[in-house]
Structure formats: C-alpha cells, structure tokens
Length: 451
Picture 1: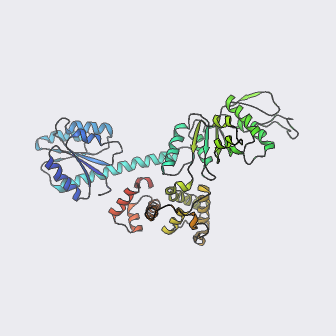
Picture 2: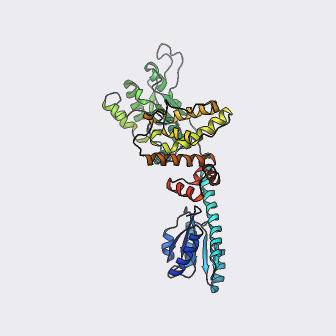
C-alpha cells in the first residue's frame, strides 16, 4: 500500500464500505473501515498518519458530533464528510466548523479518490511541519546533542530529560569513548544550572599528591609550594556541575573526603578549619563496574551507594550498530565544515564495512575515523582488512540477519544523504516506490526523521 497515509472510512452500510474500500485500494491507498463513529474515534490520535471519511448520518454519534470530537484531539486532522442531498446546509456548517471537505451523494470513485489524496497530502504536510518544528526546538535547545535512534539511546535521552533539572547526583557508566562527558554536559545544559560553571576533572590524570588540592583547594602556606590560596574544583563548580571522570582511579584516602562533601555539601580547603558551603551537582563517570570494585576493595562501598542515586548506562557502539550511519554522517558534516574539505559519499560496501567492525574505541574511534576520511579524501584507504578482520565481524548472526542489516544501512545512509528525499533514495538505490515503502516500514524508518 501507499506510504501516503491511512484512510479511515466510516459508514453504517456494509455495501457502501466495501465499495469505497475497493475504490481507494485500487488507488494504492491503505484503508480501514468502521461501521460507527465510536469505533473510528478509538483509532485517532494527534499523530495519527491519515485522514477520515465519515458519513454525516450515523446511528448514535453522527458525523457532526464525530467532527467535534476529532477537532478536540487534533484540529489539523482532515475530516471529509459524506452528505445526502438534504444535508448540504449541514455540510456547509461543518466546513465552517473545521471539516476539510464534503462529498455529496451520489459521487464517483474518481471524486472520492481525488478528495482523499488532497486530504492525505495536507495531513502529510502538517505532520512534516510538526516534526520540523520539534527538530528545530531540539537544535535550538542548549547543550550537546546525543545522537542515536536505538532503544538504548532513546531510553538514555528520556532519563536525562527526566532527571536533568532535579539536582540529583548521577553516576554515568560506559566504556571508553562512549561519550560520558557528553552525557554529563547534557545534564548540565538542560538544567537550571546551565548559567553556572561546568567543571570536569579526570581523576586518572591527576597524581595522588595534588588530587586533594585540585578538588578541595588550599590556603596560603598549607604546604611547601602553596604560595597563594587557591580554590578547588568543588568551589569553582559552586552553583553548577562537577564531573568526576574515571572516578574509579580516585585514591581511597581522597574518596573519604569526597563522601563527606557529598553528605554535608560543604568543603574544607587544605590548611583551613572553615567549612565553605557548596551547591552543586556531582556527576561521577566510570568505565568499570563500581559495585564490583567496591567488593574487591578498590572503591569505597559507602561512596558507591552515595553516588548511585541515578545511574545512566551508555551502550557501546557495537550494541547499537543501527546508529552508525547516522553518527558517521553527523561526523562527516562536522569534519567537512571544520577542515573546509569536500565530503565524499562512501559506497554501500564501505558503509557495510563500518557496520561490520567492532569499534572497541566506540563513538570516539568512529569520530576520529571519519575525520581521517574527510582529511584524506580519495587517498583514504578503505581496504581495512586488518581493522575489519573476520574476528571483528558478527559471527553469531545468520545470513538473513546480515543481509537485512546491510539493506537497512544502505537505505538509512541514502535517506541521510538525501535529507529524506524519497525520490532521490529511489533513484540512488534503483528501487520502485512500493519496494522502498515496504522496506522502510519493515525497518521502522521514517522519512521525517531524516529531514
């Protein structure tokens, strides 16, 4: 069936439903028929991708009352009313009240199809504009974008949105290169703390001898080289957010002092006896399981439970391969703009190679790979035999699964490259319209997501 949208046809006479359903299906339209307005109303929502054709004269809820209820759900959803000769004045009134059009009995199949097609085009445009507005709001929102459409990433975004402005401390877990700092920045930028400092410190990159001074600050003369007083990261992040990256590397002695700050929300500089109140959110990031680390004695158990108010898990790239074409295209655009280089479109075989690789360095590795591709252009070596060796490929997937993944990646890459233009996708992939629609439906790909 057509990808234009659905038609809900409502009439209490069975032979009329059957005849009109056949006419619309011959025009390659998807049709659902109901014998009463009440059943039809159950199917309609604000994002329902279709239109309604409804007889005015129906038992119980008539077409006029049905129109009012549809308007309450979505004023932009086209409702076409079918009228008898004596209902013209009622139909005109319905048009004033928001009906899209009316068709007077008896009507030809051609008249019905033309009116329905116009209504479907209007509906498609309405939904497309809504998606564009949402996308514009997303782009204009403060903070970095977390890219991905897989369930794991959708869940991550939803959780971030839910807890961002609560002020609760957050524990972020993810492998190297998955984007833990990006998540921390998203939490900060989508909160009321966004106007204050976002402070990040990598606990694994600071030596134990200066860790306490870096975090808590010190007074003049607190130790040999303390010639002036210095505020620490906690004070600098006051009112904002402090990211403690690789917190598993923090010495146990410093962990005790950190626990105290988290509990009392005050900090004491080295060499001072004065407590300084701090109002900040702490985001702790780790690439290891802190619960296991606490059980092994390398991380304080009480600190783990104090930090683990909300835990955000970032899935590794190998577990969300469907996001690779989207991420790759995003990094292509960013790198092309940064280096002012022509961006070459990779082939389907090359895209499949990206999907086959295990990406142990996750998103960071993909970003660096993409930047090399942009910088080297036609000199870039795509024969990545060492990188894309058989051991890195998915040995557990069947042939059908691998073919489906390859098909999906080709279609998604074409959608991204063409900004959602189905005509361009059909031309590039040499696919008939119906085949493309069927495959997009199979892989849950929506044109509006690639505009």
